[in-house]
Image 1 (cartoon, rainbow, N blue to C red):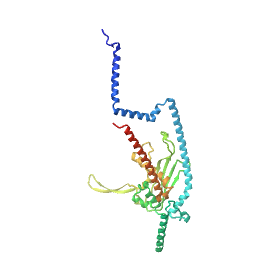
Image 2 (tube, one colour):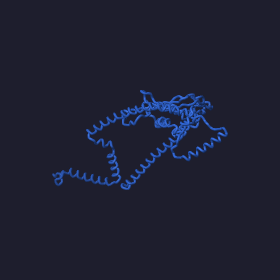
Image 3 (tube, rainbow, N blue to C red):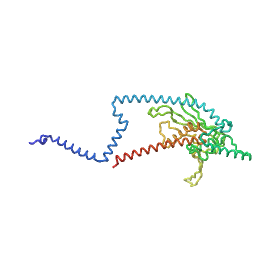
Image 4 (cartoon, rainbow, N blue to C red):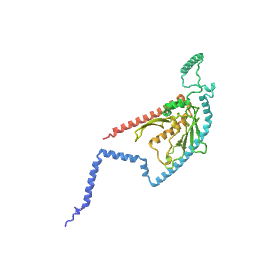
Length: 375
């Protein structure tokens, strides 16, 4: 009987394997000639080769062990950085006490309790517009002579509507102010920042001081911002300094019928049985700057906030930080608009850089497109 397992001295299974290998090679050649397959494969290879984590995975165990040791050092650095910011907070408190006498005098000038001396009122502009200033002075002299002749020289007390003007000038604040808030804000006399005492959890308080008015009995409205300056245990490498984590407002003692944070609406109700209709009134929330003192609470029970609530809270934190870092220390420059112009110029500079970078990137893409056109 003939043995079918061999052909010319070559085992049949070897012949079959060679045949399969040849078919596989042909199939591979066909696939690799497909431009779309090649592009997808190249993209995948590029992603793998440029992903830092994929590179780390290729390192020997001994090297990974040393990298882990570096991470331990990085965590310790983050904790030292946290201590640094705690001391910065202590310095802010120290220098706040040095600034306060100047801010107190600022309030006296604004309210008209004290009139600045000639020396205190002298200010030389360095913008080189001498002719314009001279013209303005001449016009003022003529106006003053006319007013003196009529005996009706205007001389309001202090600087009227100082803080309200700042609210109106700053977009971040003016967006919060409704028309019915305006007469209330015209009674705002001062805004102060108070830092937490030594040994207490890091925080700061914004104090809004009002003169007696027809809207509420409070002389001071407060907003407390609680801060944290320590690395997150779950993600210590995300630490970039102190962050606001929560805030508390205060109760406003509104006078009868003056609460602008609510509005009264009328609603008709129809009785299901008798078919009679009655009109009821109810109070519903109303947009107002003074909702600033009834903030949304950060979730402390492990439950996450919805997207709208997170945005509202983040905006609140941003406004509180802006009052502390910009508005209170540089109030007169936001009143005159000079600080706003500086902010705008800075933002325009950043946008210009971004546009330039984007243009460069687009140019690179075009070059790449010429070299590797899409199929």
